[in-house]
Image (cartoon, rainbow, N blue to C red):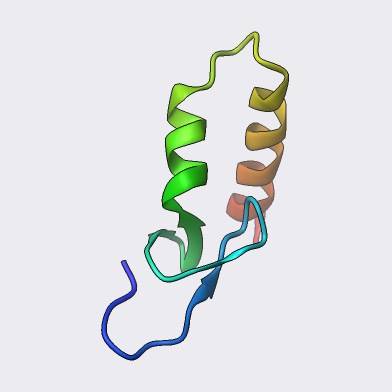
Length: 60
């Protein structure tokens, strides 16, 4: 999580600035995207988008 006077971070999933986020490998995922990823099911169309974004995150 980002604390104190630090600048907001950009979520690697939605691209929005976030003050609170989950950090994975130095990249930020906002709480909203984190929640949506956890709730998504394999058959949901958005699931493949999250998989694609996470693969890009892990590739860098």
